Length: 369
Picture 1: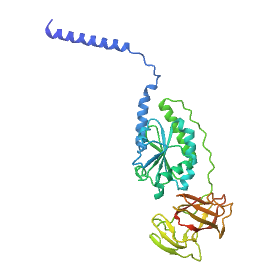
Picture 2: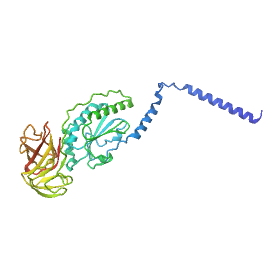
Picture 3: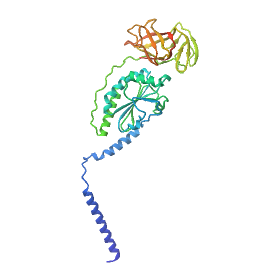
């Protein structure tokens, strides 16, 4: 037998020995208990994540927070991904549209927090006084908000999400994708159903029992829609001011016109117009507005307090139409917030007059319901 033949035989023998060893070692491994079809779970998840990457953006982090309420300073969205379904709500406390959504948010939090829902209220201020921690904290307590609230005073998180609206809700799934986005009021049933779906996905992913309720929160909502637009007093946006110089800061003296147009703002007497607000410089001056709505609200502050008399169509506002901040035809302005002047179930067109009998008040906006 020559040398070459011996090498070939040795190689073949080595291969046989190695193959036998591999077979023996494999025989010692425990048999898989995974049912047929289940071996593709990881692949399916990868495909699902890949599909989400094509369809949805990733969640953005909280940027440059100015403070936290109902949370410590370590609150981060990235720490919740993989654990929670997250609802990010952009709001500001003097916004009536935001206020109307809060009963739904607080109800959802109570109902689903133990099933894996986290809500983060991102409070992005519209006005300077809404940047004050104590003002926001007071509103959080007033509206019974138990979920974390982040003060977004520098608009860092607002800009990260590319947001332009109050209120606005984003839903972030267990994988950290923004899979739902709703602007403004309404859509409550749709939003809650999406929350339920995402919580079910979370339970399945984490191997938890799926005990998500399928009932929908029922809260009485206003059915009447105001035709009057939001009205701003400050020079930055006072385009509806009809008897003075718009877009101009400084002192102005206003004269009451003979005819009041619907959905235009009128002042009387001497006022100081600033970028965000108008401040009266004398007593017994007026704010006049003919509106088309059922409810009328205004945002104001008075550092030393102010007393406003409320007239409707030339008479003291009747108690049946007076807002919750009206007491015997008078609103006392102290806190920096939204005040409710008219609240009724009947839509109509009326002329509202606010006569500033005492004090100086900074008037920011009118809003309607």
